[in-house]
Length: 385
Image (tube, rainbow, N blue to C red; front, side, top):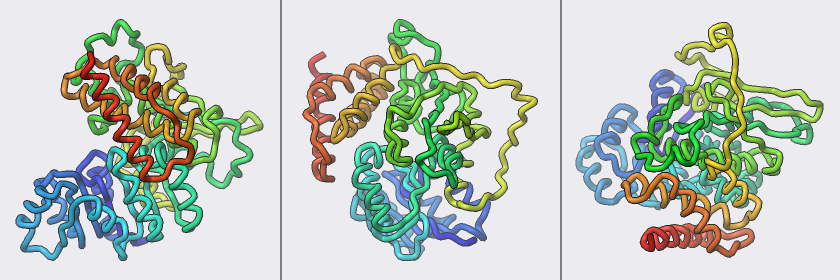
């Protein structure tokens, strides 16, 4: 097996773990393209190690600096959205890994689909906000879309070879996040450092905060709806604090197929790269005797309102999931700057959703306009406080 891989988001958590896998199996995987936001130092290190044909830094000034740093190499340096799209269309690429955070991943993913690349998707926002555009494009072009999130990878594996009509419900698990077990009064004045202290997973800062608020799980519910063609009312969130059972599928006969593994993101990343094969991975095998038991809980939707707000957005459909996602992104940005409280995130999302009039089947320009309107609404609400 030899596959050429393009990664956007290569300097982030998913991207760097993906490169660990490439590093482990250099005879099987080759990097053709890398892209990131503006981390010049890390990108230069990656270029010198993996020797891609093309590399992109979204920030033009950072890209200019990078060009000077790697002028001794044959790599071509590009920037901006045009650069991301150029990477997505790279002729020699087989697999396109979208590991960026945010709606910036939509257009490169569409470009990669149209260029007939296999899509390895770790960017929730692409399907949350534009699933009605992405999935028809996947079907039209006949390409594979492989989920990289641990929960969606688990569901994908549990569904393997089973017709969709046999599904009763999807059981989407979550750890409960940093603040699991806390009540609303406990979350007053929680700071950024506390929110980032996830007990199980090594994730980027924004995703870790989304996990603490259960917004991340709400996004995953909406993503699962598109990936597996299941109505959101047939997706049940289950808190599994050990992060050992990664998700499960309950079938119409009452049986449940579940996926268990150690909480290591390299596992679903590598499975997407090697599918339909499996390669050895240097993680501690799961020992059921050592584990002893598994714990399951219902999510506390009164305290962690990110989840019910996500279901509300999913039921509204159209442009409302974009509002939910964009409002959260803007609110989290201000929380990380210590400009708002943790619980304010929920109020700001709800305020933006209340102010929005749904657009049915929005076009890509309408999705992007809705994103900016939701962000502006959040900024306006913050300025009034």
